[in-house]
Amino acid sequence: MITAERKSMEELINCVSPYRRLLLVGCNECVTVCSAGGRKEVALLSSALQLHFMKEGKPFEIKEITLERQCDPEYVEELVAHIDSADAVLSMACGCGVQEIARRFKEKPVMPAVNTKFMGASERQGVWAERCAGCGDCVLGLTGGVCPIARCSKQLMNGPCGGSTKGKCEVDPEIDCAWQLIWDRLKALGMTEKYEENMPAKDWRTGRGAGPRKIVREDLA
Amino acid sequence: MENFQPVIVAFCCHYCAYTAADMAGSKRLHYPANVKIIRVPCTGKVSALHMMEALRKGADGVYVAGCLEGDCHFRSGNTRAARRVAYVKKLLDEIGIGGERVEMFCMSAGMGEVFARTASEFTEKIRSLGPNPARVADPACTGTAC
Image (cartoon, rainbow over all chains, first blue to last red; front, side):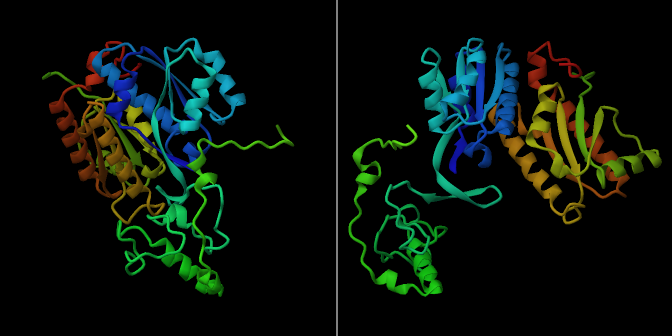
């Protein structure tokens, strides 16, 4: 999933202060799963903002709505019925959702309520960790299902480096050395010969190296 | 301010604090009528939103009363509730309402005295803090009907 974290209340209060009527929009997908911008978080942020502005004695109205997916125009269209009654939109979706609303409703200020972080997985309740960097040329089949791009601090294709100590990364002792994980997994699978294969320098053009990317499926488009 | 009667919402676990309140009643122990009890099946059911909405709708203070550590009927509901209370405290500090208006307490079903004492002490604490600043600034919010 795409993970996100709510911005500080100070930042959010500052960015919504110029407006009186706010449309607060959540998303039922990734940000719901990572507890950053689903229906519950929309209700909580709405409650917090209302409490703050009540305390300030400032008239402030919030309308809450949570879309099935903010990154799909079909669902964003549902905002048509609500957009006119709002001075601005505060989106709790990832950056994709915020941009989709901004693209559809060009006349409305649209602000993000969360900082979009990374593509990750749940490690346990309330903990998410980065797992994929979207490099566009997946090597997981060669690395025992552990990504050296997303999980090695140096994105080494042939690791580990000299900073790997007792399975931990020199950048932070909390970070597992991805190449230690890769070696352990390959050994468990009896596939250590994969480790001996030197991987060539990665072509980063499949990632962000060649600018913003697009997928076009001719059979669907 | 001397006549200020705070509205306190207490989310009480059915298996401990709610029964402790009952025990306090059976023992004829007095505790302030300011405390409005909401019985919940477990404090793990109490979300941050429940606490925030209680304050938004006019409560001056909110507390969650659950089982003693390790005694939760559902294993870890009380520890989860404690973490949520800590989260709401931080949120309230951030928005200028003040995190001291919410609190977590633990007690067993037999601790009627503790329930009565907790209710009295928390009410006094909120009385000394004064009314919920959102309630003061927003005359439309009466504490009961807004």
